[in-house]
Image (spheres, rainbow, N blue to C red):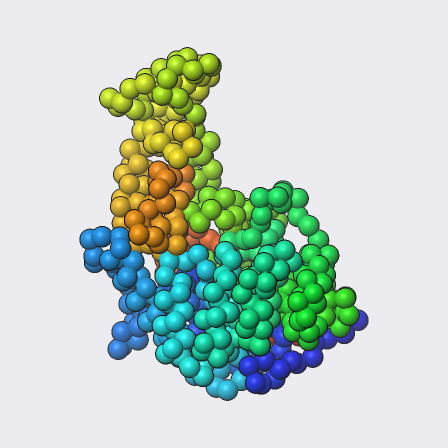
Length: 468
């Protein structure tokens, strides 16, 4: 029998140890997060390019007017601050004194630090904590502590937390609110797989979380400070042995995918409908993101096109070297001296004949073959870059003096800002990146969602508390 959860103290009040995952660009907003807090949990407003509103309450489109990337980046920061502030204020009103409100940021998002400062300064007393992943956010503790809010780092290994603790977090230990362990094989969105880990060989989270707790104890951190289990969490009765487990200490649970399918969830109807049709294996762990991180999203035509684009790829040399003894004669226009193998020359001619007539160089001394229309779209998206990441492989933008990674732009990737804004605001679900956790296929078989039932957030939280 499911032993059940007990409320905990967080942000000065009693809450259920249930956290709403803060999902990217407008996939969680004030409606879902405010309702989650009102149900007694910890709602999480996404502060990643969040929507702001005009005086009539209409969403303000994030249109960039400036000519240079640096100037557009400054516009992005202002959009980010205004949007996150608007979302927090609305979520706080909906919560009406119940539960708690966190915000979620990505450390590798463009302007992460000025956005955090801008939002926390203008929402004093309304935010309990900041969750942050996608990178090693050493300065997170310093920033959160300066505004008197908790910080909740998102990590995927005890090793990562040890580095953060020793370098920075031990100096602001009193503001550490929890540590979020995000399963890098099961969570949706960007994941923290290291180069030493095999994306095709998932590991049991229990020993990894037990190791994290051991690392926390080494640092003198009390077992009462929670670890938040995130990624792959669907039914709590499947995690019963984690609750009140002395080896693990205090445990909270984060739900990222299930809150997508609620009445208050801001994602468009087409996205919600697609979630109900997914089969096991329909979510792909891939590395096409311009961040360089692995991420998990629904395997739709958008991702299949990226797969195909990378498969239409050949290596080249600029001189006749070894097997690279054949000069490329398609896809390169008037450019000369591209030497390839005999087999790759044949592949290139076949792709050219199929309409993929344009060859684009990558940073790895390879060429990918695309249609003229696709090349035009890629070039426009790269030119329109507004610096939404600290470093972007797709456009070669970086937050440094030169605003450049110093590497060739990589057309095997895509403009993540463009596609996430589009799908969140009603764009075609099959033509955009659609993040989801790997348990999303369970919507189809879970009796709670039978006959197309879409619960309110309160109904979902009540259901979760039963263990189901």
